[in-house]
Image (cartoon, rainbow, N blue to C red; front, side, top):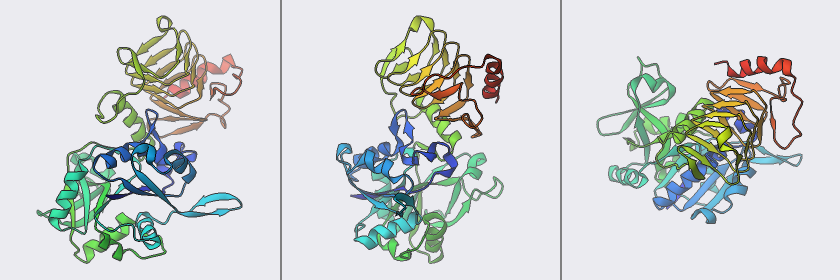
Length: 386
């Protein structure tokens, strides 16, 4: 069975991570989110997968290759061109990407699914496809019901009593929302749907194809299903997703490594004297990370591989990516550290290099910087503000 993963977006809402990493490669405890999608597709018999790529396409292609290590077959549809020797992404929209694949060679010849490459899901795809076929649908949107007070964060789908889609509302106010069912970015299509997508131009599934299907009264349905759906569209979403995984709330993601103490998991060869640090789980510490004596770590916290946490540093409810060095006395609470950036849980970002703060948060592959003691407390207070 065939599927498509949408992986061409720039991920502007989850910067700074997506400056150097495409959204499908964002790790959930060291494993790219797209890898979880491949596992789900394989479990439900979808083993022929085309991925449209554009922004930082090489990162995705060099990791997943042809899919054989993941038990599937993968091909890539690159959207962009080379300019002055550099790959320049030029995404053509989610529907435009589908049409481009079909115009190249008719790949979609039976019922197929399309998934956004940036969400963690545990959906029963087999049941969803069975429902879609029973309805005789040309297209089906997999929906999820959310509390009414949350509808303004999502695209709302309005259906009749038979499940036929009547309208969409993009992030309506709570008062205006006509439904609590939201669009999860998981779609089931018949090949005929491609007849409604123009060739050779940018075209979007949600804002262009779907309104067209409603307008022509096509057999277009929505099915509300109860499943886990962790969207990592924005930095606060990602921060929350990692917290949920560490707290055991995401049932299809296991904490990697081995458990050394209650709620404390490590990768290989972590350098730490457990008697001289204060660590309260759930905490994951990646391989080849050094935790100095006197450090304090409070979960839920993830510290990536090859990090160095200096003595008297405190890390609480935070996500630290690989190769981060946290200087002595730094106090990170509700923060995400990615390279030269420190982001709080609302998404506000500090560029520690541009702000001349890299003496406190830096790369472990660099020589340790000098530490101006007069500035230490001030910057600790800044990073701890929330």
